[in-house]
Image 1 (cartoon, rainbow, N blue to C red):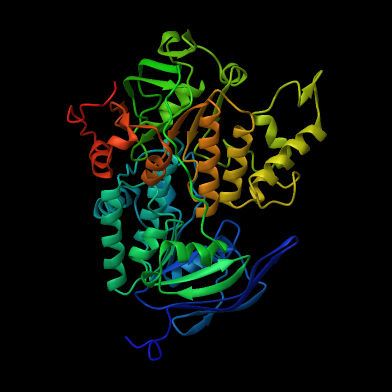
Image 2 (cartoon, one colour):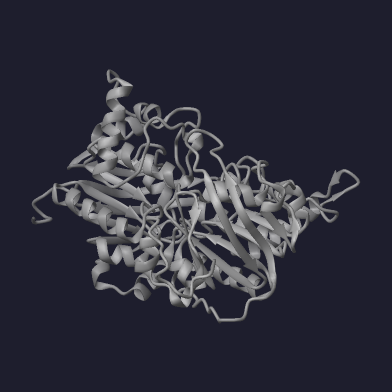
Length: 511
């Protein structure tokens, strides 16, 4: 295929988008050829999401041209984009909680089809791509990872000519990632172009044919990622290599938090029941939990954080004291911190400022006195987090919903870390975060561990778990495996365990 004789599938010329306080896209050019898997690489806040929203018709550019298959087009809205043949999976999902999976997907399809027929199509498409989806489930019962699967299947049902994927592999096992890559290569061989946004540099180098690098809203380079190293791609993206994360082995301290025979029936018809879960969390240790999304992580965190009030009194012990019956606020006041996987809506209130969001975890004598909120204190605390974690935000008064996903994640992590909890329950701390920010977050978690905190780290990023965890265990179908020291684990072993296949083959595993 000669590039000069074949029109580009998509060509952006001089795309500019300015908001009152920032230029999100500054004279951006981008060319994607038919059948090309093209990566968009950039740190959080570089303008990637704005550019994708322009392509998909969510946002209109202030200046510039969009050329689709050789013709100038104006993409007025997502429906127009889908009609052209553009499908997109957003980092922040656009699903209605009270509708089923099939009902949500039907909203983006032409009228005249039955839900029963659509449910069958969804099941077939999901099976084809190895994505586990139940079309009859209501979205409010799904985990974040399961919602991402819904979005991927919804995009694929439209048989797109251009598919935009934002962090698509965060819900998959290593084995399933390779299956997805095979599918994407097959789509590309059939002429479908793919815009692939990921912060996993190894994925980009393995999968993509071309890479456009953005920084500060501008294109700073175009390269063939197959000819680059991870270090060189990192330098193109953030101007330097990410700081090395140093994980030093150290003996764990006393048991701080214990789970004893935690068993819970389904909270709703599509929930995952928890079955006889037992483990200990030690002072100065990170216990990593691997698993494919939707295997009980959400239910386990709700039980440990106090959100699920059905937990038996003696099922959870804090310093040997039964606490299964206590409230989330009691646990926070006694040194238990919590970072949920869902940033907007649970980790932060989108319409409130960053300073006001401090009250979600910092309700104490420092911030509230005699019933009055001390706003200057909140602004000072928020400002300290913004500076320390290098959060790109227009000060403590910026609305949480105005931040990019990665910057909001840095803020939420910072809000919990600065409380210096004795126990920290954290889910997906670096999901959708660029390599520099991910390294910083991991370093902060290690520093917290070194200060004596006991951390439970639930993550679908196996590289992350292996990098900073002291011990590893797996959750599958509401059960947990034995734990074993990270140095004795392997990707292959953990991948097998993620399918529920743990046995006594690991003699050093701990109950």
